[in-house]
Image (tube, rainbow, N blue to C red; front, side):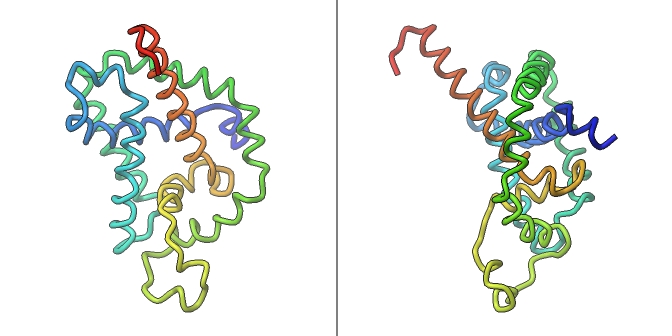
Length: 195
């Protein structure tokens, strides 16, 4: 079962819907109601930006474990459901993401095999198991450097096995950024505006 899930883009779609839900919480500050359906990729990037402080503040009191993910994922799904009238192109967007993640499946394996990923694994595992322990840098100096992306990765670290998904938040972020750039180029070419 684990290999079947790894060969499909299920985990990536879960991460994308998670960050979409949190991005929709703050999208009203950046977009009109009519513009939201055209900027879902950017809204997901905003969702990544919102997850970081939520995870860091939560980690002061609790470890960022699977319970944190399940509770916050229900919140994200609730926000998507609440904004369903604004998201009339949501199914088309998810289908587009599934196709892109299937096309990029070989890149997923190339990234997975790189050993740099395991450099950050102990910190992410530490965030999953413990709340912030003040003074821990005196025991291990590598824990004294802040890495915000470790908090984001720790939110999704348990999906389909932790060490396999350590990089998936970065992978989904990269794909969403590339789609955002593509949308801006497409929009600028259709408006005959030069970049």
